[in-house]
Amino acid sequence: MIKAFAAAFRTPDLRRKLLFTMFIMVIYRLGTYIPAPFVSIKNVRECMAQSGTGDFLSMINLFSGGAMLQLSVFSLGIMPYITASIIVQLMRVVIPRFEELHKEGQSGTAKLTEYTRYLTIGLGVLQSSVIISVANSKLFQQCQVDPIPGANPMKILLAVLAMTAGTGLIMWLAELITERGVGNGMSILIFTGICANFPTMLINVIRSDKGVMGALLVVAMFLVITVVVVFVEQSQRRIPVQYAKRVIGRRTYGGSTTYLPIKINMANVIPVIFASSILTLPTMVAQFGDPSSVWVGWIHRYLSSGSIGYLALYALLIIFFAFFYTSITFNTEEVADNMKRYGGFIPGIRAGKPTADYLKYVSSRITWVGALYLAIVALTPTIMFSQMGIFGGSFGGTSIMILVGVGLQTVKDIDAQLQQRHYDGFLR
Image (tube, rainbow, N blue to C red; front, side, top):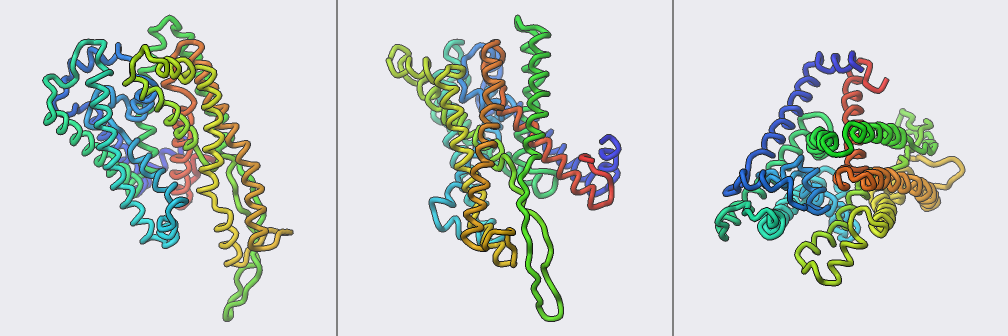
């Protein structure tokens, strides 16, 4: 692997891509330390460690690399872009026009990307307004300090505009990595934010009553989950596909045998993010309610992170979204039509609808394995850390799966480019 890494930097084109990606990552990290207009850094830092942030804010703060609790211009991180991308994908099921654009090829994809950008800015305005509101009313209340001293509508508006502009800049940086760097830009920035928080979390564990043994347990859990994630993400069911011979003019096409790979986990980490977002919304809403009211007490009792009701509902939502998202991303009818169009068929299965039914049969059973894998990997660290009082659920299976998944995919991308230049890749 070291030789392959050296070979990657010896290749001029790949070296430029790697250095460009690292440069964008540095810019992203620097932006997390630039405060929004009129935000008092002194007040924020004094109160940040004491304030109860809630699970929802902790998750966004994790993905933003700690920028959110510092009220920086990059406070929202990449989350609005992720949410917008997912919403646009889901709209393909609801709005026929979106599905038509998806099938139009490059021009349709460009239009969907444009819609995603507009939606990202809209979500940036909404989420930045909520964060400023929560920071002023709840987040720093127990410290008796104001994050924006002398706050008035004009100051709040400028802070919201700065955070929204930061969201647009992050979106642009992510697209630059995708176009000119290595790997998926959105995933790389998430990876950067989580990695930035990991050393601080280990230091906090060592300083707590858990000490070095607690930190070693966290590292051991990380390594075990890494092995599991790598094994499952590499696993796939290969369905044999044969292409009939076709004579066009003087040339003969087809007659080859290949396979259709179906991953065990086709939904990746999306179901976990969806489930986490939905379950943390009630806790966020409860922050604005009267602590003595019945419904607020019920939410804190049964839907707080670590409770039995929370964990059970979390697992059910992960399984549901695994099936839901897989059904959207893996369209069996479209795959069957494409195979039929190019003269392909599965041995023993007729082309057309029987092929689509067979693919649906196989994918649904494989998805059960992938959904249970996601639920187990997401819940195991959460339960273990919650029982030990480590992190309070802010660093669990979700972040570990993202770290390993993004790292594995990036290594594959580098390996593919090395293979094109006849070098031995990382994965050999």
